[in-house]
Length: 202
Image 1 (cartoon, one colour):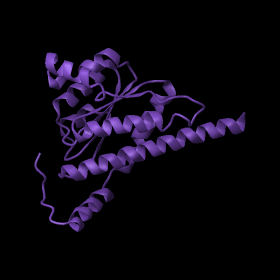
Image 2 (cartoon, one colour):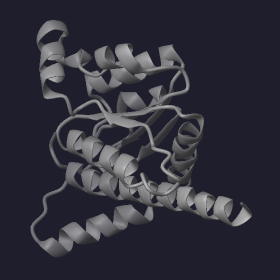
Image 3 (tube, one colour):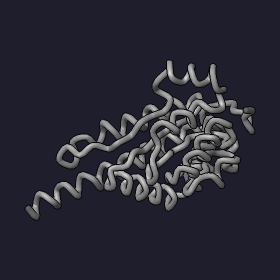
């Protein structure tokens, strides 16, 4: 996907990054936190997926949510899985069913009603992401996404979709990471506070 503006020096890039940060929909980020904590409380699973840089973020975010909260609440674990992480499974589904089905076919095996499918896509138009979200909706799972540009075709398939207001893919990806980190830190803090409060009341 072509970047919308040319970047000639570092000052220009970071000015653009700062401009977009101001416009991020912070309330939507907090709503995603509430959705993930609801899944955690109910013992449901969060499934993450993305392509390219978004695949790397799906793996990173799964690690943060799973490992980063492991000691916050008396050992209760956050059930989270990145659908990008099993390369043999990905290539098998791509070879036999088509790349557009690499996530939806995995979800058919695992996803349950009230789970959360969390899609990450810069454009919001990747077919495998759209198929995963559609399968999730048909199963009764919650659908969450982060995108850029105008949200693409994934936006109406998401119960909650945070759209980074930029047409520059690298700016979008930078802020997707920041959004993921903000979600993780808020989730971690809220789980930890609950555990402290429970200990004090015991």
